[in-house]
Length: 152
Picture: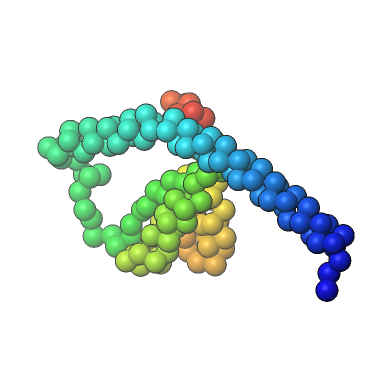
């Protein structure tokens, strides 16, 4: 049977653990609130990208140009855009999974990776297969470099 001293010691240990747990919950709550605020601050950017793409698609309906016509070449090009860092792990993983497990013939696919996560993923794959994998700011026109710098 435990003595009174052992019981008191165990009781204080449990209380101390409870205090630590409550403090950890508070810290986690604050971190979650900050993450939500950061996500809300990106909403104007994503809305702008959506509107820009929508505008491009609306205006390109009547355009007839040889570069916009399908050809006989079976090769396809895909621009993969991922983040460099941050809380976008699920997004990055889903984009990579879409390409690797999608209905693409990977030997007939040229992948242009934008963002650190895609570049590292597809540069490893490029070593094993015929994939191409890199776009850097040096290869872009000056106007695009400025957009590149703002995006990352």
